[in-house]
Length: 201
Image (cartoon, rainbow, N blue to C red; front, side):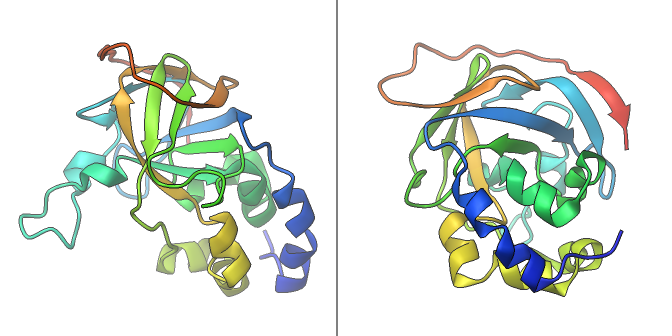
């Protein structure tokens, strides 16, 4: 696939800005069992301690942590599905971005500031303040213009590279689930395990 040019990327900004603000859709779930491996799921379990069950978040750790442990505020990486489609092309390539959840929802800092909670299926996640930026792999897979685009002032404003989140209520999520901004207290924690793979990429 040819990488998108800056001209093509910038021409799609209006479409990206039209992402729903309060009620969106979970378009894709991607689990990362090992480095550079992806499993596309139709159903998955989110857990307050383990993040996405079967994902390598905990095993991978956080390079800036003194003990190499996983960062608790980076359990879940989420990307705008419209941005993924623009940058990656076909849905089969979205997971190359490295995120776990791809949602049709406005992920901008103005719409989802840190602390905002989202319900997905029976789970609840909370947006965290940890920045989510691209890496060398992102450039290799999608091109330098894509990296510059998501890290431009407008790209950062809209969080086009994505956002980080943590699980605050365990539950099951499925492709097609509603993603909804919520307020108020949670009604307890429910641990769910297991996931149903659709295919292995």
